[in-house]
Image 1 (cartoon, rainbow, N blue to C red):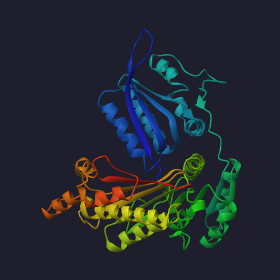
Image 2: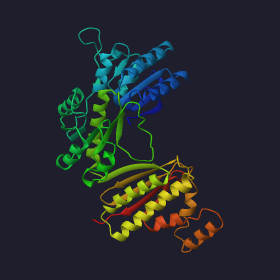
Image 3: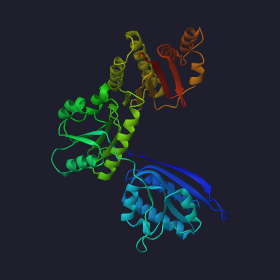
Image 4: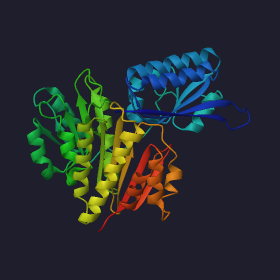
Length: 417
């Protein structure tokens, strides 16, 4: 899913006429799904009396018409209260959209944060260009993707043709397929960086798991296009997660920006990792078995001895069992999430439950003790949490630690190369 994050910071302008203002740094997509985040952040600032605001758009990759309408509305509210709202460091593709919808005739737009501060202090920005309309100061577009994109889309109609042409116009190679079988057969030949899968095509529901299990294609980013009305965040039973998703109907520009961002990310990840898989399941027996079966399949491909593989599989099973039984309290609706990452030196498995955590520091402090096993058995006889599972995971891995409040366990094993 596309996302939006906001970071809010109080600052003061430079120079003699110092003015306190609020800098709002935005990163991600301002689209239909994320607009409420943007709106809530701005409303909270204005309601608290902060009317001098700079919106830093450096990290914004897309904005829709609702977001632009919000900017104009918040600008009016700030002005009415005696303040000013200024935009800064707008990317070219976002700036063009703003310009076409008239933002530049209403809101001050600065190329740099320093210029935005000057605007707050009353200086005029961006000289007029052939008349009274202000020029749009933008930062340069990032280079387009040069990777390979595979598209599983309906073969007829303009949608597939537009997607193919847009990627190729930006410097990438595009291959269009009409069935899951055609896509799978072609993967080894094209080795795509990005795979876009329209789940309205019959037989596409299992493709994410199949592709993520292929060592050569495990790092390829997968974007799913879900049918109208589907909630892409839900997990019913067992699910191997895609890298991102959209729900029909969606803005085509959002797909292009998301695709370009994912191709860049994959290019970076391939320098650091050889495989990344995220899967999630509920507490039902069948779902847990599916999760453990996938974990076993992944571990079986590692460059380890059979003894080491068996030990790592035991560690994963214990981590999952603890998450289901202790972390989630055997609540069948609660989820367990496994993040499986392989880099040139190690394999890392993070098993996360939805529980409240526990005093993991106490149990980790006991595992090095020579009497750890007997102590754990005694605690279990007394009705408490014994720690035998933690001891097992520790002895089956090279590194064991709990993160946060204790509802995430990190299991690491060094690889033979």
